[in-house]
Amino acid sequence: MTPQLRFAQEENHFDREFIFGWPGRGETARSVADRVLKTADLLSAVEPIWADVRPVLASRPFRSGDPGFVREMSPEALADLIDRKGRPDPPKAPKPVSRWGYSISFHTNRPGVDPMSFGMSVHAGNTVENGANMVRLGFPLASPVWRDQDMAVSVMQAGIAAWDAEWAWARAFISIFDGPYWRRPWMTWFRQPQRPPPSLVMEYPADYPPDFDLRPHETTATWGGVLKIWP
Image 1 (spheres, rainbow, N blue to C red):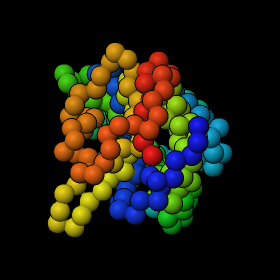
Image 2: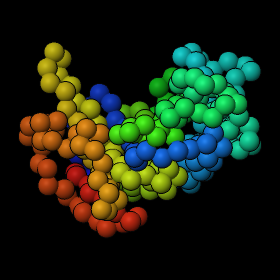
Image 3: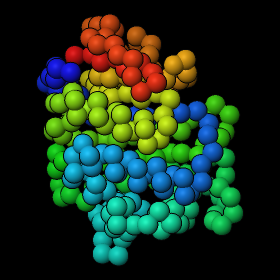
């Protein structure tokens, strides 16, 4: 694929992210741990630095004694941590997790706004009716992933494979001070014939910038679905 640079060159983005989603599906702490480890492994094949991701258990800098890199943890140890720290509501372990599943975040241990850093938030195991499961990968605006289409496609493929996602997209957020708020897609992927709830995809034109051309630059059948890419 030819790199498309317009997305990276646009100056009105205040945030960018990859999102992977799927409908209600039960998970155990161990299955979530296995998927997290697979995500780190697949991303490290795209960029080796991205293997250095660790659990985030508090809104503060990492401290001595905090859990280390997931690549250094056994699946059992990571599952135990997720079971103890990744439940957004009762019951507590060792009782079975509630229908809301698990929520836990991870981040690279890199100082400052390092362009090679990234964060991952996981909400998996949600079986509530019309509930959503979702993994978000956030990379800084200066990350090379936003300037290299092949790298970004590899990240999409890694997230879809690790989480058995039914839909995925890479997008930017555009906001004007005291004005409207838009979602600017770069890539979308839907498993066919599965379609995500409109409330999650935000496909209505009103949610896109008013001058945005909704016709994709590329459309490719891949990974059991359809990948669309805009410049």
